Length: 264
Ligand code: MF3
Ligand code: CO
Image 1 (cartoon, protein in one colour):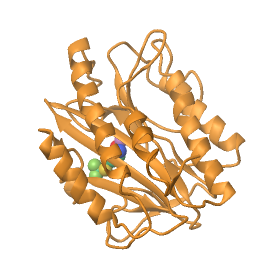
Image 2 (tube, rainbow, N blue to C red; image 1 turned 90 degrees about the vertical axis):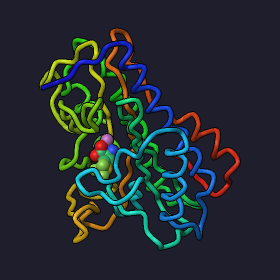
Image 3 (cartoon, helix red, strand yellow; image 1 turned 180 degrees about the vertical axis):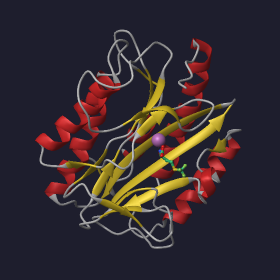
């Protein structure tokens, strides 16, 4: 059952989502060749707990870390590891926090140093997919309008949409109904209403759409080994405009001072 949120509850989700954005920014300063995901994970967990919150992902269905760090052919749910990042890596970082009874959830993809043109286009297109999807998150529209917007933009740019994983409602639980697929038909699916808070999270592959899960039970990778990109915002459905509760502004400010990062 969909849980509709009051204006007060949406403000609490905004607070959690803003802390997610600040956590991303905090670690984004340190992304460079040689740094490990484990180091970023430790920083993120400390930062979240220092702000009176807890990491949403840690222990969620047994997930062992604060962050998901998915490098290159990893789509989502990659484990932060001891393998140092290298020039040319495509690094997607996903983070959630739980504070004052509500979750916030957001993901961002970074390029490290010089990126191949196709990979840069993948990042740019995936980010645009998220923005186009958010434009459809209006009262009276349906989930399928969001899904269609993502699929249309990704495929018209020659990329493919991961189907096995979806966006979701966000609230007292990290994952609530409805599911928000990144592919679908306009005018279909759950009607969007005032008070709905959802995480929209396009996962777009440079090559084919097929994925598999590694033996660790979590890491989702592309079957063809080509790169995948992922951006996510937590938003409240709006009458004229969706209310974007998470933000990339802190990230964008933080990486101005980090010349190792390449964006779109
Ligand atoms: N943003 C992702 C999602 O909504 C991250 C979940 S990781 C998990 O599925 F460990 F919490 F599952
Ligand atoms: Co999510």
